[in-house]
Image 1 (spheres, rainbow, N blue to C red):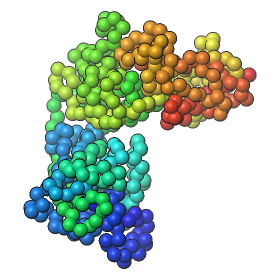
Image 2 (tube, rainbow, N blue to C red; image 1 turned 135 degrees about the vertical axis):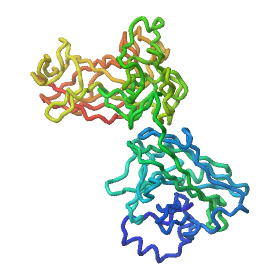
Image 3 (cartoon, helix red, strand yellow; image 1 turned 30 degrees about the vertical axis):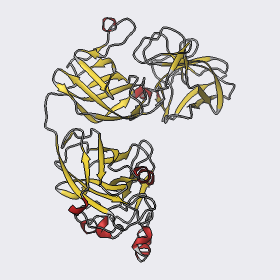
Image 4 (cartoon, rainbow, N blue to C red; image 1 turned 120 degrees about the horizontal axis):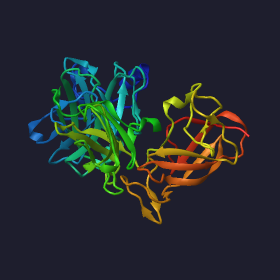
Length: 474
């Protein structure tokens, strides 16, 4: 399926409509929005009836198909992301494209949930309801549509088209996140195109179109994750993605015991942290996660090694069953410094740091009940973080889930800047006597006095997404 041209204003659409349709057939970066077959959108047509591809939709003589696979069957849990796959098959064609959208079954003009691309093969397209003002969303995380762009479509990218050439049947993967509250049945509208490949041509394409309907999952005593219910540790940024070794917080219902339980020394096997507490366990990408807290509404877990990068299914299990898989994005790094919301002062989020005398690195008296003062240039202050990636001791990597017993260092060195001036890091690695907690001993550079000094960092090109401050005075 090929895009007829990216239209950014309605007036432009009128001008382009006068051009021959086949002018656009030699682009391979996905169709315009509104050609997945939704009733009322461009007459409910697919790209075949539009004319951007010549062929008859669902012609049985073509002997191909387009299909969606749902990991939880034909059900959804409100707010719990699913990794969906679209597969285009055709016995004679060489390349594939598609467009898919999800709508409230009882109101097809209403969007049901949101989509996100997970690799370079797909792209999210956001559209206003008129279908003439739309834009592609960069394939980064997180992905969201601008205000007023109420419709979403997921489709092949130019790279996805190129990668499909000569490889049919070809499968595209992406995330669908259902609405946070049940909207009843949801209908997926899908159109797929099997074409000649490169060079692209609109002639003799095989167009396939279908719909799927999924229903809200019925309630049970099994664990149920909340909408957007998996984040990295909130005091360290609370990101929607994680990395191997990151601590994450899982929210929902029926997750564990009614009375919360924090790990104890008896739960450890030597220096190895537990993977089950009070009958609760968590797997991420099929690997057992490490647990430090379980309750009915929250579980804290450390992402294990072996999960790779990209989407990984997270499942919480207990004696009542298992939760539906939750699609969690795993990045090589997902760094965050300890900066709890209670350290927000005057609208500025301060990092939680400790001066050499044990006081907090903050303006004097900034938080009632805490002894604090600004750091002094040349003084070493201590900060903590999660998600900063592998660390090694004597050349040996320290895996997640173990109590750190020796000094170590980050495999990917970190740089930190206070007020734009680089600080010396006397120590950067996993904190001794802790599990999955990073420690940074920061020598304050010679900078001017300030109660709100900007603090930034860079680890392997990753600058994190926190906006942080500290305090420095001579």
